[in-house]
Length: 593
Ligand SMILES: [Zn+2]
Image 1: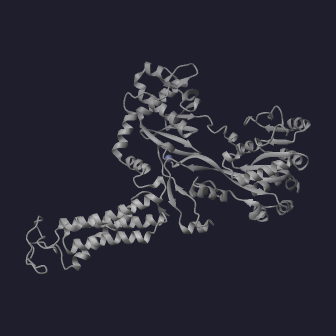
Image 2 (image 1 turned 90 degrees about the vertical axis):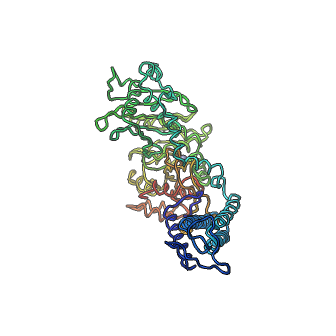
Image 3 (image 1 turned 90 degrees about the horizontal axis):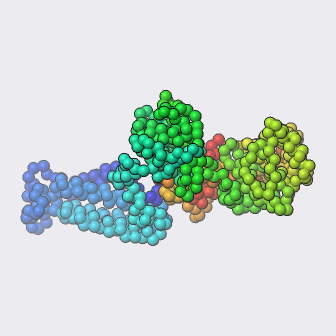
């Protein structure tokens, strides 16, 4: 891929070009029959006039042919810079779809002219060379900024920010300012008894560093929508680890004393400390996070490597996500239309499948939210309360009330649609699928890697030859992919071979990004998640395969063909092209598929 970062330095390339520059200048010097003389320069005539008068440069510069070592080094540096910029312009113009041959030739021409003049007339003309190629380069940049998006404009707002962020001294100063001694915690955490962090600090001001760390951990968890944060001993330090979108990141480290103080603050607030001694267990802390309201945090003190460690659990920030509907979850319009069609039939079973923690329940409830509950009687059967659906009766089964009893009650009420949060047993499969094959509709989920596997699993669960084929109309499969962070992402140009492999029209490659990493995304380059969805429609050939004894997922896949089966990978690629996620991320979540 051709990088479209603004003057991103690739060191192996720099090294190559410096060596080239040395060679160019050395060869040119030899070709001109000259090498810097070690001793006093011989007085050779140049052209007509004998011995030119001594110029400002003392050694070896009596004539234009002589190059002092100082000038030579200067010329080499200028040549390396010129070659580097030329090569960058060539790559960059190609990546931006500009006439790269034209710009590369201009750069080569301007630099060569300057180099020739410097070598043949006088080394001081290296300044003219610098002016020539940097002028040409500036002209290129002006043209470039007219065609590229704002994100990658040379010295545009974004580029300036990037440059400033790259100056280490500035970053260190910023870090010191935020962590300076005597800083106040930004959040005032409190426990159920009403004791707050500021109360603790009044009692023991020496805990101030720990209080700041604890408050920062909570603030950052809220801004990045992290579910779990751990403060973990590692050697003689403490490391703050964040579980973000299902991936663990080590973000910051603190010295042992600061870490111990943060633990002391948390354990005292959570009621896990008496007389200065910490004990294992968990307790609750709450605080007002700006923009997110009152947040309840579960604080747990555990022992790790012989030292205490802290785990903070935050509420499910995305709990109400199903309310944003299937489009909000990332489902494509055409697939939502298919779901709508399936719902309109008011019979048959619609199945959502995924491995654990991949959002299938959220999707199921978003589907259920599309049912018009004023004209359709929807009954929800759950093992534990999942999400609230208004104007709908929820039935909960468990040890004291087995599924069979509940289901009898539900059926007596004569619902049009049954939502079973998760299909888990043969009994549940047989009963609810019979309902869907007859007069009603079933919405349910199954823990399975993809749609063909889910169907095969369901056949095994029912043990009946044709029930699955008669009942199921549509299977949705899904995964969650991380979205590339909009704050720091960098646009890249996909390679032609890759586009070909992915069956993408090279004339319309879309917008591709690569993850970079910034404060807002804990340097992961990703922020938030979205679904990638697959869908399998039960056509006649698929139903036929399911009836045969020992139907396999592969046979189901073949019978469906591309018309009735859209894979999660296809949907994932469409989200890469749309600039939402990256191909690496799609491949990561679909590993083993
Ligand atoms: Zn970022």
